[in-house]
Length: 329
Image 1 (cartoon, rainbow, N blue to C red):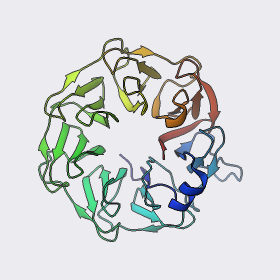
Image 2 (image 1 turned 135 degrees about the vertical axis):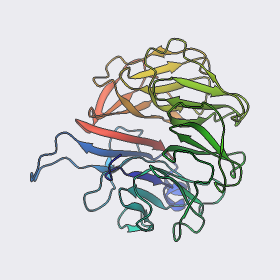
Image 3 (image 1 turned 90 degrees about the horizontal axis):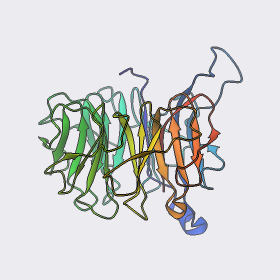
Image 4 (image 1 turned 135 degrees about the horizontal axis):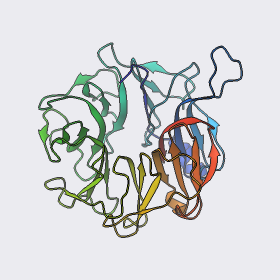
């Protein structure tokens, strides 16, 4: 992984905005675009984009200099967290200004997650393991005890027990029961795990997407796992999005196969990629209040939008760009 990899965590919009607007905010992280030309003045803008109309239109809210954005996720305390090749950045004014909160030991940040019970507690998943802050990013500690290979692609904080944290690694799933102080192997040995999701209705129901091994599901909070790949013709799964209003409806973003959908809680899958011009989908988001609207971010194909639950897709924006992260607050 190169040092240009970056991650963004958006811990939401300001509380006053939530009270006034009462509307969902969608965050999109755009890594780069093949339309960039060396020295050109009209290169496309990359970074962080925000939409308040379910992805119909977008406003750029990223770093004022050139920073390649990797991932985005929304929380609640008004802080925007961003990871880049040389550390984790923080903005407290909705992206107008930023400062690095880490030292030189924190690099190649892939994702950042904030505890849902305490916004001062922040985790960074990196190519070199997990880093944690308990003081809103003022100080960071490496938390790799128990890992073999420390490459961590994703983290999931259990919303029912926030000291329980799952890590997606090159060697399978790892679990910490004490906020990252120690890690133990928790299943799928030898599988490259890329993404971890939690059922919005059933906290013990977990899903992982893997490199070339499809989807695995746990019904018991990560104690046991079973593959569930019926109908899935493309087994590298970058992202999983679950309909928050109906958790039997699940979407997958795959390498080479576009989007797949399940209507039975992940027991079977059907390809739903009509209109997608790029089959490598790295980001997915379901709009909670309008769950028929789905956004799909592709690698080098930009953003697509469906208004019929994935049956058809239309190009939305970010021509030839890598859209690496989508989330809704």
